[in-house]
Length: 69
Image: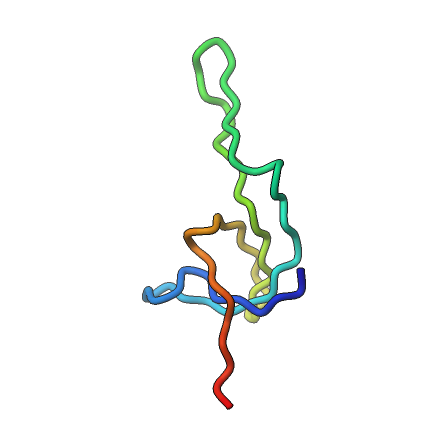
C-alpha cells in the first residue's frame, strides 16, 4: 500500500493515484442466491486518485507509475 499507480493505463481514462487497500483474498468472488447473482465480484485494489476520487480495480486495470528523472 502507498504505491503510486496508474489506473486504466494507456487508455483515454488513465488516472493517477495511490493504493490505499489491497483486498487480496477477499476479491474476485460473486455471490449468487437461488441461481441469481446478487453481488458482482469485488475488485482487488482500492486507489485514492489524485483528483480526490476513489476507484476499485483488478490487476488488469492497474500498473505502477514511473516517474521521469
